[in-house]
Image 1 (cartoon, one colour):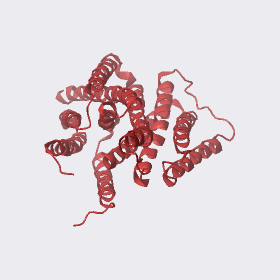
Image 2 (cartoon, one colour; image 1 turned 90 degrees about the horizontal axis):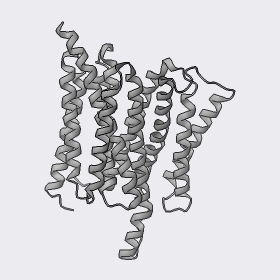
Image 3 (cartoon, chains in turn brown, red; image 1 turned 180 degrees about the vertical axis):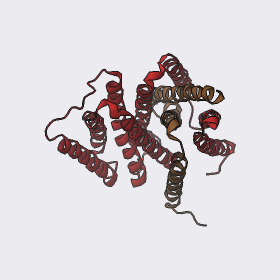
Image 4 (cartoon, chains in turn green, cyan; image 1 turned 135 degrees about the vertical axis):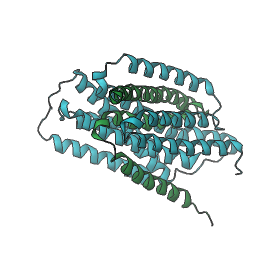
Length: 100
Length: 256
């Protein structure tokens, strides 16, 4: 298969659309009871923007990129670490209720 | 360009992370599977981060590790000491941080592609690279546009929930007109950025102007919403942040 300049964006579009479907199908099955942890969990996962910050901060792309990248890494890590920890705290509460 | 072991490792890491994220979210469909699912998602995030650190473009790790440690400390402190009644506020602050990261990366990347890269290439080969492609610029513009309004929108939501801002809706005449008008202006600026080549002289000014207006839009659209509806606003901003993250993925994927 010949690759043209159009192939990569088209593949990315495939991923985006398919991921959209997966997201919709999985999330609609989450019971109302778990909506607050869901809010926190999806927030933590959208912290994948940390990955982009890593390249900006460490890629040797100039002073501005490194400074902004450092701030971005810090902010994104606050988002990710805090997000997962808080979701875990919420879900721990559920487990105790289940055992009762 | 031949792929070496680093590239395979990084792509495998990202693939594993994607699978773990989906499994993690699936765990949330039942209370007894939820916690285990989230742990899988957390492992996925760790895998993605570690995998990225193997990227050949990472040459100055000191800032990365400082940021990671600092961010982890702040994030952990917030989640340990924040009372459980303050979950929505905490999520709003988290959002603002995530959107801040996405916007800053967008700005850094734009600056790199339009200022730093041409300068180094000019010095080395005497030629300057062509303008950013429409897809790259579209993704970058989208990332910064939605990222900026999510930052201020989330901070406003935090303020309203925490009681720092009046919880009652603040309305004024022509508010809807102003909000829609500003948003239309932002979208027009976005189209300008995509259509005109990034080497044009006004391009950078328009880019930063769009980011600034985006910040304003974020404030103005949350102002008329009452404090009780903030969780809905946060969920909506959550999806905007997700869109901004996707845009970042497309922008960085095409150029790396």
